[in-house]
Length: 139
Image (tube, rainbow, N blue to C red; front, side, top):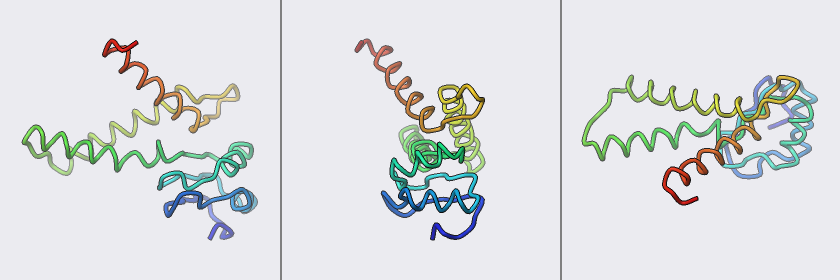
């Protein structure tokens, strides 16, 4: 499916779905954005092709975080024995996703002004875990 011309590609099916050759084909066909919608559907060598070609690549840990976030919101509602409206859940989800984007930009900004979302998501996640460990007195 990756030989079809597109502006945006959304690999959502399975792990290791997009390989180097697929990435090269997407770049050749003018794709400008790849956002993962599954757990690691893009092989590391394909990610490098996208990054070297300046294709905006959103790793699943950032772009696919909405489902995990909503599950967390559901657990919060259950433990609080409350119910939020659809609009309240959507507002909370938008706030969470904007915060993820902010972290990716903060930690992934490159000298040329572009953003490496893989780097940003990885460093942002590390910082969050490290801060939690510090807050709990573990380090």
